[in-house]
Image (tube, rainbow, N blue to C red; front, side, top):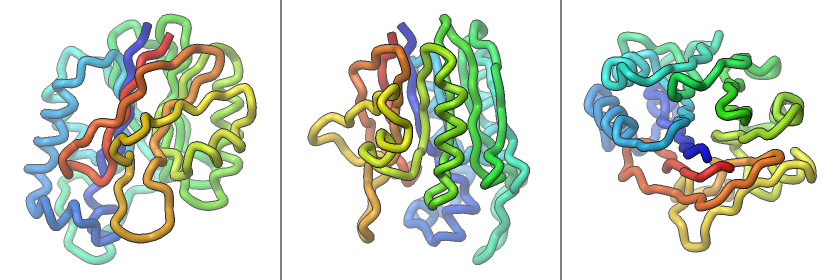
Length: 233
């Protein structure tokens, strides 16, 4: 059995560029980084998948979790401030898998259709665990096809921010993949106060392996996404 968690922790430049209420709630980014790190440090899961990790956030996590193994995909596209001054010492953006020493890196690749999104895969206990962040427009088609290709080789789990709801994701990946349902009455994975986009866009997807006990945990406004946990195997 592998315990997993996925969380989009929100890169500060994206928060500022899109005028996120999270940026208003946390005017000091160093304070929010410390809060995110403290929450991640408390997680008991063996595999922690994180999206939108800034260079400052990654440095904080590494310092706070010296006994964990970090697998990192550094995106070639670095977010640029469009509205406000840059509050970060390192504004690079990464996809991150935090694991135990037994997890072996398989691949780390940005998507060809978006150099600011990608996939990161490790093998743990015979299961391929894939962290991903998928683009929220029609570029997602080739991205989901690539994810399915990597996952189809054997028992696999996909974790991440897919930017689409469960039904759309399941249809795109095909019948070999099971997109776990969020429990009835759970808080949204991506709360919104306006717009028609789904509020459940962070998923755990299984290929040839059972998933149970999926839960959504409220992160009290530390990010614009809540985290998702599950048991695999």
